[in-house]
Length: 432
Image (tube, rainbow, N blue to C red; front, side, top):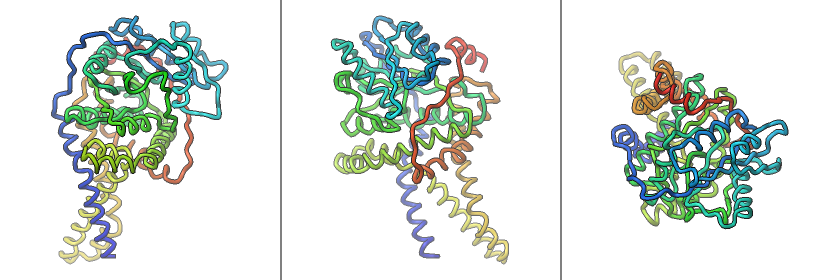
């Protein structure tokens, strides 16, 4: 047992050292000023791609928010893929009514957003062979854009950023603890990963929606090759390995809808975790090999943050183990042998859970307080979210990461019902 404990402690120390850099990320994300891009010298052209399945309740509001953006409308074109929609669904009809170019896909053998994007790329290349926008933006149908979103992303593109993600806020932050935890998890990601990397000059990653890539990275003529169940991870890893720097524009803000049901959120996280494992099998050798060749921290960070999250959880358990062992030895020294045995037997799990919760809670507090004015929720709901994120992580994300090791996972649609307009979001901001 002593040898096993020694080995466990050594492994724990190694994992803690591997993830020690995240303390710097938290400090930078909390205290550093956001990276701002200079005013653009020109208005670039953007193709905006929207994928949606049975999204008639929300897609109209997204299109309105794009068309109402403070950006020359002649510089943008909106394309929509109504992907495997039900016969009675009006996603395609609504998009056509709002003057979008619409493609419909009906293929139950190839399920997932990556296949919808591939169809759009192929069809646009065939239907508009001379069309070559400066950049392509990707959104989900449930999103909403802040009025200056495209203008802010245009600044990043004009500054030479070839791939760029943006600040992901939530439409339904205050619905319940599930949506609050999921929403704050993305705010945290923006604060402690995207922002920190941008300030430190590192490349980051894209997360499914709210990003662009320039025509130098990929065009309609080259096609969309990424069809994993987490096509965003596949695109990010591939771009990183090609030496493409993925930037972050914090001033470009969009809103999406988070799951409100436990089972729905679990399935979504399970798919993401499974996608991470698939990405690990595809990219781990290339990422580590490139890191050792170049000593570029971007590859190291991407490998451990996107493909090895279990290491962070192990670190919390290791700290808890140290506390338990110390406490037990103190009690034993005080002739409390019976009590000490009970501590040895029962406390490790409880303390591991407590320290994990508190570590996540501290993260949640910093992320929420720094972004207090940006979050569309009441004061009570914001405070609740600080307690909700640790529970969301421990009850949903962590079990999903374990289940993904053994369970076969397929892509499943997430139902969206929050039909909120941009004006309603602005009213929520003034009342929050």
